[in-house]
Length: 147
Image (cartoon, rainbow, N blue to C red; front, side, top):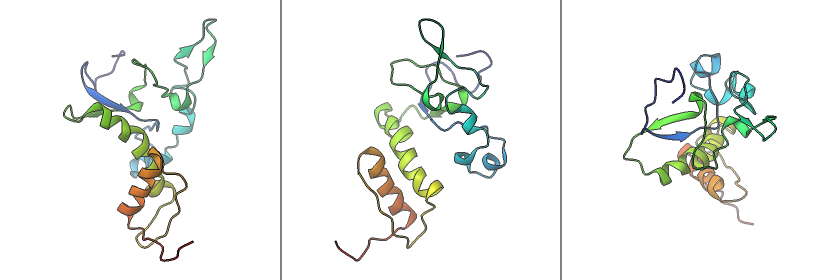
């Protein structure tokens, strides 16, 4: 744990979030963290503007959404970590922190699909399948037209 981190303890089960949110801006306070005023500041850097990764010559390396974690261990800002129940299998939780957040999040936060809407999803990999799932949860209907 980094200095000053009190929300987590060693051994906690967590998932990562590529959406950095401050929890305080107008969007976060309205329950729309996907639109956080400060999220774009963390696109390639940590929310404080620093960079946590460097190459062999100590040049900064930008990590997408400050959350590049394709490794056994990672250094993350506290804003990019969400504690989960220890009963949740980590292999399942990993799917939620990527495919579900992206696919279902696109349905509710970007497209704002409403009951009765018709949506098209191109590609049904991990994100696409969760987009379809999000459309079903949002109440989108099947098209009666066939091609």
